[in-house]
Amino acid sequence: MSTDGKLLVVTGASRGLGLAITRHCVDAGYRVVGAARSPTPEFEALAKSHPNSLRFRELDLAATTAHHEWAREIEKQHGPVYGLVNNAATAHDGVLATMHDSEIAQVIQTNVIGTIILTKYLLRPMLLARAGRVINVASIIASTGFNGLSVYGASKAALLGFTRSLAREVGRAGVTVNAVSPGYMDTQMSAGLTPDQLNSIVRRSPLGELATVDDVAAAIVYLLSTNAQRVTGIDFTVDAGSSV
Image (cartoon, rainbow, N blue to C red):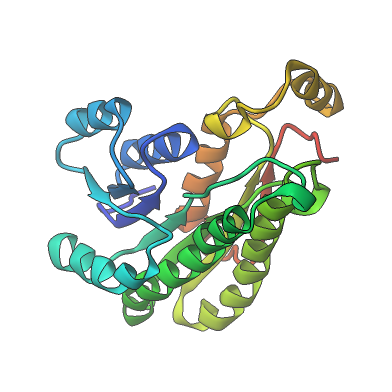
C-alpha cells in the first residue's frame, strides 16, 4: 500500500492511544500533524526520529472559536488534509447526580462540539479533492455503558451518530467516515479503574486479555488505507471480544 505522503491530522496525539496512532501512521508513510494542548517527551522523541513526516501543532479542542483559523493554517503550512483522526477526548469519573455542571459541559464541549466543529473545517479540503478519511475514536462505553461514565458514554454515543450521518453526507464526494471503538486498554484514560474492575473486564474477554493501543492504531491505519475505500459508516470495535 502506498500512502504517497498523504497528510493526516491526529488529535490528542501526544500520549496514550493518540501517540500510538501517530507512530503507526508515520511508520505507514503518512505525513502527520499531531495536535494536542502540549507535546510530551515521548511525542518529541517520535518527531525527532521522523523529522520529515511529523509535526506538532498546539490545539485546545474545546476552544472551538479558533478551529477555523487553525485548520486554515494547517493547510497553508502543510498542504491539504487527506485524513482526520478525532482521538482527543476528556472524561470525568463520577455518578451523574453528584457531577458538577461544569464537568458535564466540559466533556460535551470537548468530545462532541469541539470534534464536530474541527471536522467541519478539516473536511472541506477533502470534499474539494473528492477523497479523504475521517475516523472518530469512540468507545465501547457508548454501547455497553459503565458505572460512573454516563456523560463520557453519552459523548461517545454522539460520535457514533455523527459518524453514520456524516458518512451519508460525504460519501458521494469520495470521503469515508468511520468510528473505532476501543475497549479498555492500559492508558491514562483507564487509570481510575481498580484492579478488581480490570480483572473483571479481562475475565469477560474471550481472549482473556485487554486490547492494546497498537491493536487500535492498526485498525485505524487500515481504515485510512485504500484497502478500506469501500468501508464507511461503521463502528469498528477493538476490545479483545469483551463486549461480545
